[in-house]
Image (cartoon, rainbow, N blue to C red; front, side):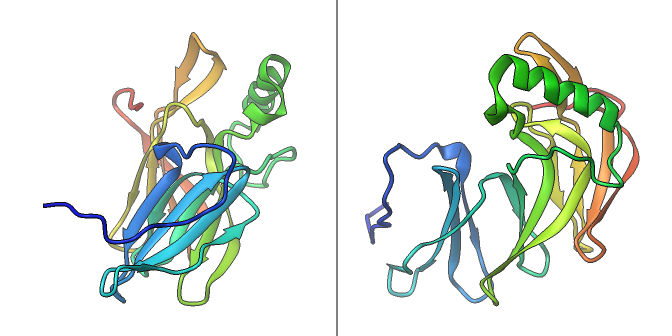
Length: 196
C-alpha cells in the first residue's frame, strides 16, 4: 500500500519535469533529493524515520544527470556554458562548430545542454566543488549511459553529437571518469550505437 507521509515545499513559477529530479538513499538512512528548475539546483534530505523533509537549499547551477559515487558523494553533469576548451577536451574543433550551429539555430540556452562539466556534492560537508569535465561532449537529448563502478570511477558511454533535430551523429566512445584525479579518459569504442 502507498500512503502520503509528508510534503516537500518549494517555491517555483513552473512545473517540475521528472527528467530533472533524482533521489538516492544514503548510508545514514536519509534520502537525498535534487531537482533542477529556474536555472538552479535545489536539494534536500528526507528522513523516513519521522517522514520529515529538511528545508531545501539551492546551488547556482542546473544539472542534466547525476549519479551516486561509491563514497556517497553525488556527481552532477551540469549545464553551465563552456565557451573555451578544457585542456583535455577531445574533438573540440567539432564541438565548437556544433555549439556555433546550436546558437545560430536555437540561441545560447540550447548550447548549454551538453554532458561536459562535472560538479561533485559531498552530503557530509554540504559542499559543492567543480570536478573537471568529461572528454567527449555529448548532447543532452540522447543521454549517454552513465554507470558508477565498484572502484569509485564512473563509466560514460554512447550518446550523440547534434546538428539539427533530424541530424544527430552517434558517439561510440567509452570513457571512464575518476573523481579522485578529476580526469576522464577514453577507453575505446562501442561495437554499436548506444543512445536513449
